Length: 141
Image (tube, rainbow, N blue to C red; front, side, top):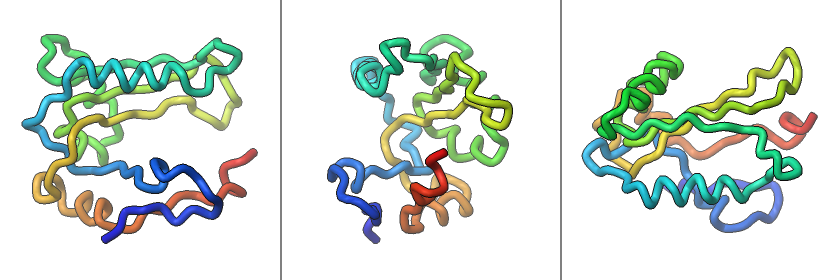
């Protein structure tokens, strides 16, 4: 099955091919250079007048700190069974308050793609579905 996005507008091929898997390879570590490169790329994305109003809490499994477990434990209960295999977990928090109805917090799971048989059946089923996202009319305020 193709995981390519069905975009309404012409966008770069990297976005068309991008995939957020549920299955991660729990035995394959993500090296520090790769983690640093990801957050370096993030540093150079939209910057809000160079204020960069977001902060990351990043836990790397096996680094000798409790951060990975703390991030994992803070995830929604339904995400914990599949996220347990990600070698790197992170939380993103913005440093501004956009409004009372918007909670500015999201989570990241980073690692190498694993096998669907290593995650709960419901997560594996979602992982095999075509990619979908909200229409622009639903996300632009």
